[in-house]
Length: 612
Image (cartoon, rainbow, N blue to C red; front, side):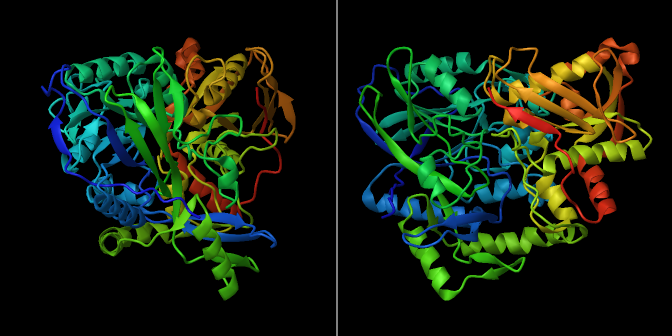
């Protein structure tokens, strides 16, 4: 049967903010049980996301179908239900948010976070950490967001006073302390220390080292009488693990950024769900325990992406503030309106099929049927959806077969199909603009979703596929620097001998270029083949000493997210003749797709990847 974890709301009083003076470390502590619901990387997915699933009930054939997962009204319903159940059982309940509410759909494109602040404020969130995408529009958008929400926003290692825009924002905190059953629980939040490399904070904003800040926050909170400590982060699972291994005194880490749906991969496979960024070679355990330098333990959780589900963790802490129990799970949420493919169309399930699917889900430990909160659905449908619908309407191309988006391949021929098409569209448009380039580079993180078979709309491209709208630039670069940049970007994307955690969005896709990467080879020799598609349609080896004209979005062209090698252009005459086309990548792709009419995969592979 499905495992149900119940949680409870009690009177949880906010004791202190950034400069609070609470009880001192001499207070007499008692054991404490907490139940915490958590979400992360919701990325403006107000509506459910359609996902392909597959089940195989005992004695039956594999059955494939589509389910509508998550969405804010469904999440709202579930959090309210958990809170009510918890109150009835007298348990201490909390909701934490691991960041990245911004970007990802046309709702954000249209409303710039106003919709996030309003709807998230209706979910009873106790604290949220800033994600990197909260900085995409600069600090003013953050200032507006934090001034509207009714919960504290954390960023312990951002120096708020360094930002002219944010220094007076009262709702950005280093930490908060909450009183629960007479115990002080400290909560602080970490953001990525290399924020300037991967997002667009104002240039005056300073970010401090994560590990150093984490230990400082623990020590500060303990000095104020809180020996039960939670860290909410948006730094990715690998960085969470690294912090836990280096810092003493953190009981629980509620994470985000890597969008990892932690849990038993065999259980997850029983419903055919592809968990984002979950590598079979990694520790994917939910509520995994990591040892601290002093012999203590830290429990780590993270709940996937796009409001498709939620995490629920039960934590027991001794009076000394040590973990004695940490267990729970992630659960996907679905509606009950399932469909299947019939003659290339989606049709409702038959009565028996519907019964089988519902029965299977009812018994599943990783997915459950959850209704939507009708009031929140009404707000979305009447106040936000009409403007979005206008953008979604225009069809620009037909897609005969699904074009999957893959951040980092897991097999040599496992690269995405939509990603190289985006790179190719940049090549096509730049040359059409007479901004001649030899090839283009596109980071996987700039592409945000699969393209399903069927009509492709402006709305899907702008709001889901390529929501960032980064402008495209052209510049000169030597062949040897192209080679080095591609190798390091792949290494950076998987955290291979870079000294930092993985940043999967850095993985490079290319247009009019083809490369092979072998991670088992020595650093500096991992790009074993690098070829350019010339004007005659022939593949030619890239010349290390030749200067080429390269196209890339301004985000990676500025050296961000593992692409510092692109800055080698500045050693060339006129600093590489850098030109910003002024045209966004989503605009280029839409024009390319419309010119094609029918959007098919490229007839050749641009990436062959052998993992380390």
